[in-house]
Length: 174
Image (cartoon, helix red, strand yellow):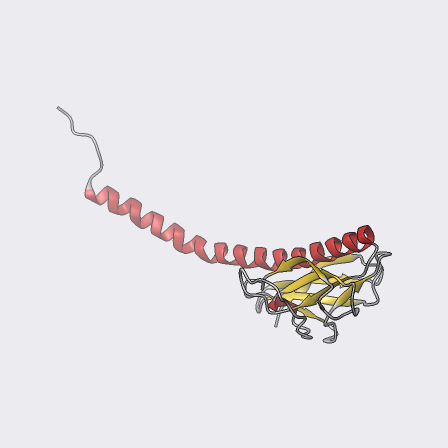
């Protein structure tokens, strides 16, 4: 009768080959994950602008987006931080009271938590909120940079018309 199966040496050889392949593939996987996080944060910003613009037009009211340190599963009340670091989290609200100030008559539409170790900042260093009017236009114009050190970031140009275009940066983030 003939025995079938693997010897211990054959099994160890297969385990060694799998280990070498995993060691070679792991850095590529980490780069892939980080690049996807950068793209996702840039896309989330663009989606938030589009959502705010749509809501402003549909509701016939000003909609504001502002950075705010939002923890996972946090609940209102929220407050605009006045920061130009948009990677701390942000929220979108119908701005029916004092424009640019979150007060008692405002309604929160969307909350976005902080973005996974990826920075999202205003290139001018002055953009601390974005107001979109009932016509879909904004009084702000700026460039937002989504980055992580050593990786190619994304640049999102925000126009006064409320439109946003995103491109990959030509150089790696500092």
